[in-house]
Image (cartoon, rainbow, N blue to C red; front, side, top):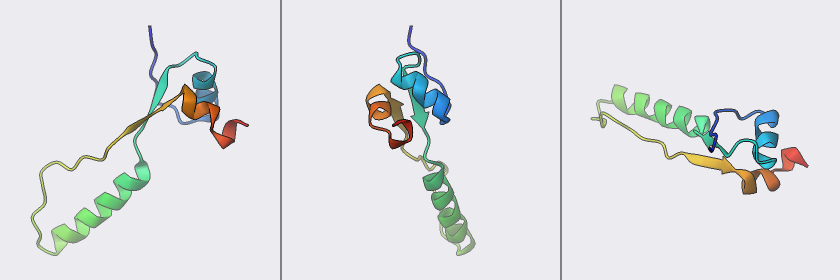
Length: 72
């Protein structure tokens, strides 16, 4: 069984590095905030916006943890 968790904390990253957790989804809150602010400005400027705006996600896996400077 593979466990995927939502935890960007150091302990979660260590668990991924050690093989206890398979991966952690990365949701890029900086990109979400930037796109939200841009969309608000466009909305108030009268522009039409799509009903759904997706921000690509990624997975933080064991190889990422092995190269993470926070875990050195």
